[in-house]
Length: 152
Image (cartoon, rainbow, N blue to C red; front, side, top):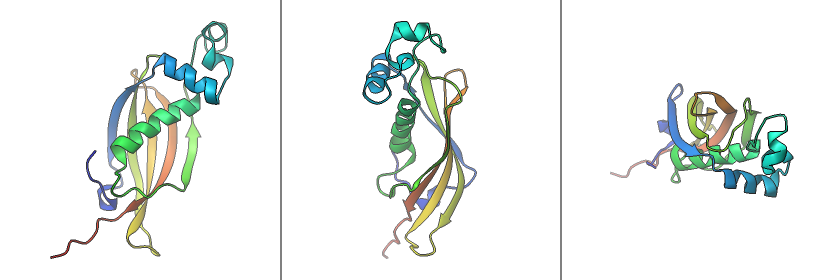
């Protein structure tokens, strides 16, 4: 992770991070705790179900995305949290063994008028599997601290 400040999020910039591997045991454990539908937790039921095998909960896919996003895209020196996300979609299932890559595109970056020490960065996010298929899509809004003025 490099130090990154508001000015470093340039609209139009696309970056990729990862991959991160989808582990079957973690997929099932996450689903048992948070989304216990048969196609997430029971391999036999999943094989006979609508996806012909186990698939990750969309929320697990989101958690994997957030891990890469927090580790690689946001910076601990400047990230001030998020007021939310928009347009969350899971267009294709994620399966055990998939290798997911985070693709980010800065759509907008504007300084706050009321708090000039920070800005609002809007990022289009996609998680892409090893075949290049998009498995998660969303738009994130983050509050990012501006680089402090250097004392001379």
